[in-house]
Image (cartoon, rainbow, N blue to C red; front, top):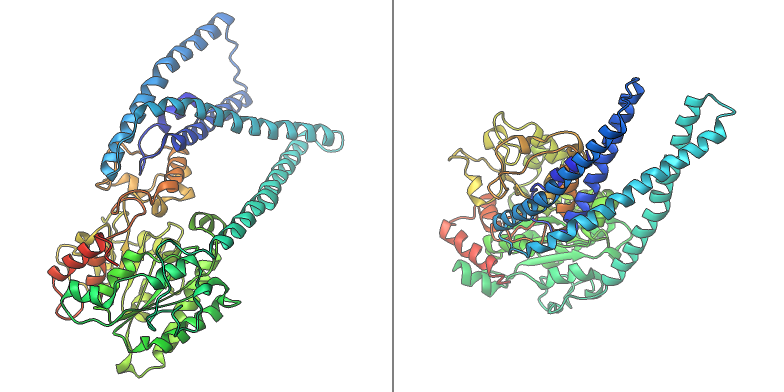
Length: 531
C-alpha cells in the first residue's frame, strides 16, 4: 500500500511543484498508504483470518516486493519529473533540472518515518493508559477511553499551545512589518487619496498594503492616454487596521473619506474587500479605473495583520465581518442620496477578499438586488455563496465554469472569452466569478480526501495535464501543497489574476461608447503595469 501511494503521489496535479513540496506530498502519501495497509490487515485478522505462511513463502514475498520497488520507484521518479515539466509548460513556468527529483525519495522517506513515529507514539500512549485503566473497567472500554485521552492530549497540545504560539508570533511579526513601506511607494499629494495632506487618515496609519494602494493606480493623464478621453483623478480611500477599535468604526472612517473626496459624485463607486494584510490586486483596481475613465472611487480597509495563507487557516471571521461592515456602511451612504444622483455601486474582492466581500450578501439574487455589478476573483472553496451557486448550476455545465440560470445575471470565467456564452443575453446588474481551472485556492476542500469532485470527473481545464486524476487522500495533499506557490505562476494560471480584469470590468460596467478596442488598450496597459 505504501508503494502504491508513492506511485499515485508522483502523478500530476494542478500546478508545478518544486521538489521539496513533492517530497512532502510523497512522504505523507507513503505514510497514509502504510497506515491504510495496516488498518486493512488488522480488519482481516479481526475477522479471524490469519494466514500462516511458511518462512520460505515470506522470503519470496519480501524479495518480490523489494524487486518491484527497485523497478517502480526509479521509474516513477523519472515519470514524476517528466509530468512536472509538462505541467510547467502548461502553466508557462520555466523548466527545472530534473535531477533534483533524486532528492524526493530521501526526504519523502524521512517525512514518512516522522509521521509513522508520531502514530506509533500515540499507539504506545494508548497502550500505557489502557494498562492503567484495565483493572478498573472492561478492557474494550479501557482501550476506547485511552485512545480518546491520547487524541485529546495531542489536539490540545497542537491546537491550544503550538498553534496559538505560532499564530501569535506570526501576528506580532506581521504587525511589525506592517509599519514598513514598500520600495518606491511615496505619500500621495492629491486630495483624492487617503493618506494625503488633505486626508483625515494619516499616511502612517494606513499600513504597508494601504499605503501601496492609495499611492498606486493610473493617473488622470495615463487614463486619458489609454482611453483617449478626458479623465479626472481616480479616488482611492482606505482605513488601516489601527485606525479604529472595530471594523464597523473603521468602515465609518472610510465613508467619511468618501464624503471628503466627493466620491459620491463619481459615476462608479466600488467597495473592495481586501485580503488578510489589506492587499488589493492593483491590476483589478487599475482596470476598473481605466474602464470608468477615472470617474471612479474605490473604498477599502484593512482588518488583519496576518498574511493570507495564515488568515486562510486561522481567521475566517474577520474577512466576513469586514466585508459586511464596509459594504453596508457605503450602501447606507449611497441610499441616503436622491435616487437620480447615486453612483453605480459595485463590489469586488480577491481570495479572502472575495470570501469576505460576498459575506455582505445572502446570495446571488441579493447581489443583483443591492449592487450594480460585482467581480469576485479566485474565490476559496469554503465560500458559502460560491458553493451554493456552483452546486445549483444549470444541468450539463461544468463545475469549473458553471452556467447559472442561462447566464442571466451571474457568469463564471477563466478569461474574458468565457463571458459571452454563445451570445446569450446578459441582463444587468452583472456578477462575474473569475476563476482558473488550475487554482488550488478555489478547488481545495477536505472533501478531496474521500470524494472525487465534479471538476475532476468532467473534461479538464485547458491548463491542466490530461493525466490529472483523483486519488483518495493523495489528491488532497497534492492540492494542499499546490497552494503554497499558487500565486507564483504567470497571469491566467493558478491564483494569479492579471490583464483580463480589463475584459471583466468592461462587460460589468458597460461604459457609454466603449468599444472592444478600448478594452484591448486597457488590457495592454494593465499587462505593462502602467500604473
